[in-house]
Length: 472
Image (tube, rainbow, N blue to C red):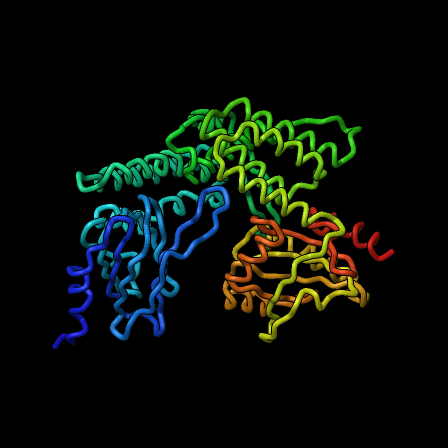
C-alpha cells in the first residue's frame, strides 16, 4: 500500500496556488541520498555572476519537498538536489511539480503544471548536453572537420527546440532562448585553436585554416534584446579577442605598465566605437570590471577610465558595480592589509591567513577542474621548491570552488610543495569577493606584515623578482 504521506505533494500542489510574485515548486525524488536538500538558486546579473539562493528545503523521508519562493519576473534559475543539478526557467505565479529518479536524474526528470512546458524543454536540453558535445575541440586537428562536427551538433540542438516549441511556451521564454540558441556554439568553435599536449602538460596553438574565424563576423554586435544574455556576452568576448584585442600593438620602448595601459585604452575605445545602447553599457561594464580585478595598470589610470565610463553608461546598477570594484582595487593596492581568510588544511584543521605574518606569502588560488590551473601549478611548485629552506617565505596553494573529495584525491596523486589549503563554497565566494578576482588561477603576494605586495601577480615567473625584493 502506498503510504498516506505519499499523497501530500499532490494535495499541496492543488491547494498551494502562489500569488503573483512567487513560485511554488514541489517534487518527489526517488532514491535520494539521506539528508538531501533541494535548493533553487539564480545569478544576480550577468556582470558579477553572484549566485543567490532563492530557497532551500531538506527532502523528507519519502523524498518529498515543497518550496515557495519570491520571484519577481520571468528568468532562469537552477535546481540542485544533493549532487544533481538542472536548469529552470520560472515565471511569477507558476506552480510546478516534478518527479525524478535521483540515480537517473537527467533521463527521468519530468515536470507537471503551469511552467511544465518550458522546464521539460530545459530538462531535455540538459539531457542533450549539446554545448558539451560540441566542445570536443581537443579531439580534432583539422579545423574544417571540427566545424562540420559542431554544425551537426547545432542541428540536433535546433531540432530539439523545434520539436518542443509549442503554444504552451510563453513569449518571455522564447525571448530568453533565442540568443541562447543563436550564440551557444560560438565559444566551442572559437576554442578549436587551443590544443593540449598530454605528454608535456602544456597548451599550444593549433594551425587554423584560412577564414576559419569568419563565423565571428556574422555576430550581431548590437543585439539589444540579448544585451545582458551571458551566452551572447561570451560570443562578443570571442569576437573582441580574435578580431581586435589580440592585435593591439605598442612601442617596445614603453615601460611594461604603460604598455598595459595602452592596451586597455585601445580595447576600451574600440568597445565604445562599435557598441550601442544596452550592449555598450554591458560590454564596457564587463571589460572595466575585469581590468579592475586583474590589471597591473596604475590606479590613477583606472580611475580616469572609470570617470569616462560614468559619463557613458546609462545603467545605474552597472555604475554601482564599477564604483565598488574601484573601491576594492584601492583596498587591494600595494601596502594595504590583506583581508583575513579562514581555510582548512589536509587534516581538517582551520588555518588563518594572518597566522603567516612574519613571512613573505605567495598564494596560488586554483581548482582541480581548471585546466589552466593544472598547467600552471608545476611552475608554482617549482618556485616553492627553490625557497623550501627559507623560514621566512610561505607558499599557499588554496583550492577554491571545488569539492573536498576532488581536492584530497588530487593531493594523494603525488608529492605537493608548499602548504595545501581548502576553501568550501561559502569561503571561496567570500575570498573571491574580498580578494577581488573571478577567474583562476589567481596569484597574490603578501609581505611579512600581511600587506599586499601585489594582489594580481602574473604567475610564478612574475613572482620571483617580487619575492627577492621583499626579502631584502
